[in-house]
Length: 386
Image (tube, rainbow, N blue to C red):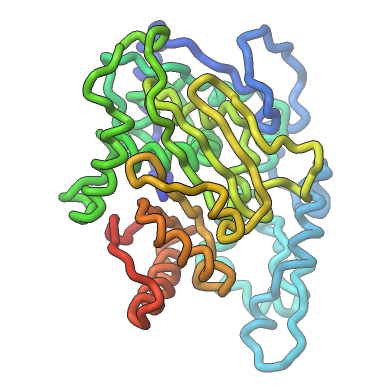
């Protein structure tokens, strides 16, 4: 998965703004496409020096609800490390990060040094302030995203810094703004970085021979040799089907966020499938199951497990179909086994990400173990790495 690098976007970045149209994302929680209507200026709910609040006392109901969810589904690390059968839930909030981390003050003090030295506390503190900043009511100028990419300008996806600069994003002068934007764009730009002909992955950088063959097949359709460079006269070509399995947060993003993927491939038609029991929140009956969002971008949602949905998607073609599994947790559950068997039958490219290097290593080890037993027959397309 693309990870955020520690950098500040160049200040001279905004010298190129006059050649692009910008889309204002008034609310990251809205599924409606944003427009350039005047934004009324209101007083922020929270000032920038008042962003830290313990989750249980947050001024925002959804963050208070998050506290309750952690208390129900979380685990106290001290209890987990002990041999006794009682595993208490975390209800005590760390005063430094504001998250419920331990079941009691006693266990918190017992584990305090590890909690801080491991970096967990600082990361949770950062997440706490970021979440409150998103809801603070300030004008989020960092969410004024560019629209179409000029055909004579090349985008660089080596890291977030270069991507924001070459893509023409507004200048972001602090790490928090970079985190906000990269968090929203992680899924579509991870996909783009794999498919794009100038993406960061090549034979010299992690791409295997089999990976090159797979991407070459996809790019044959994505970049046809004879095309009209006028989007208005461009005739439909074959549709690239992107299957996102085990979809959770990626299926709940505002649809215009995925337009950032489409803008990088102006002559390509995408159909994105979000597949998995959590792809629709709470099985909401009013939630759409299909959307022709733009002429070049459509979406389908299903709460089915992939191995149950597989037959309805046949036939598959390695030239037009690709699979993405974002931090699926293959190493933590056996529920993925039937799905992976079906995926390997398609002969299409499959890309898996992890939350961090340790998580990715666990996923790779679980897959390799099955491969050694003869249960999976596969070739690595990208050498696993952060």
